[in-house]
Length: 434
Image (cartoon, rainbow, N blue to C red; front, side, top):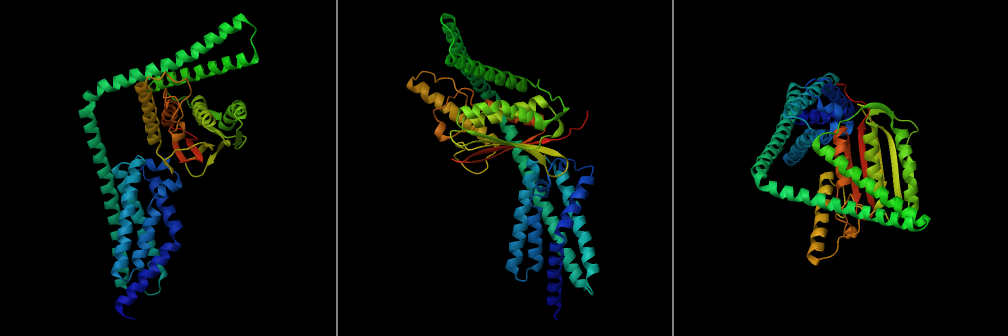
């Protein structure tokens, strides 16, 4: 066998060896990162979030080791670079700093070095040239991956810093507009409050004149409930804006809390002709802020019930896989969903909802139309809901997002136009003391 052919055979064998050892490589890398005192962010991630683009990069490394033609080698290296860039961006979004990114790559390189030694011991007579080529290729993989990841990470940091500078430069010019918008938001909220109070006053007057019927009492009860919800939302939003909300972490049974909440909201779904399914363990003991967890679930469920016309709502809770221990709450509806499809960042949903509400208000003002009847605003924008009230648009969803941040919980949204939306909240089961 020719010299170059023997090296190619050894490199292909190394690729197969690394493929067979993939699970052990990833597990060893995870343990190494978990033990590194300077890589703290990784402890908050699930296994899938931690691995990120690395399995795809290892696929590209194996393709590179098997490549005989130059074209195949270039394609493999391009795939490595693209995945490394995406990995750096994902780590920035997950809250890593550049030092943590570099140390994770160092840990991965050390794990691959251990695998190379194991491969060398497993081969009967590996040539020095083949081993040197293998070491060179793995070193190139690690250095290139580290370089691309950190470069992308730094580029995003610089872009973020440039954005902050631009925002600061525009701050004085925007201050007057922000104040105007704040005043307008409070004016709209006051309009809602006045509308609900007017209904309560009128119904109360009618009740004084004649005996109260079941229909009258129902109208009164719904108006009072709507008013109470709006007042609670405004109060919570104000406290969050002022930084007065803190978390009160105590042991509690999340399953019992959610089951009780769902039992109280099920009649609302039944009134609207919707199914309302719940699923989860009978007990789910964890540490957390019981009141704020309940508020998050209540806002998501009420919005799902309010804007679902056919079908229904499904609420589930369960332990999440992985370490550290976490648990999830999932609220799924068959409502209109977002008209953009796919998975949308929550901030984008908020922005879109706010823009849509403001546009409706501006169009109504130009036509001289009277203010619309008070109605809870949808958390998600949809072309089928263009007639919805613009007042309070996005407040409920904004509160959910802010409360999740306060509780170190992650909030994910999956939606498909015409098929519904799913909100998934992942809570820590324990919090560091102090």
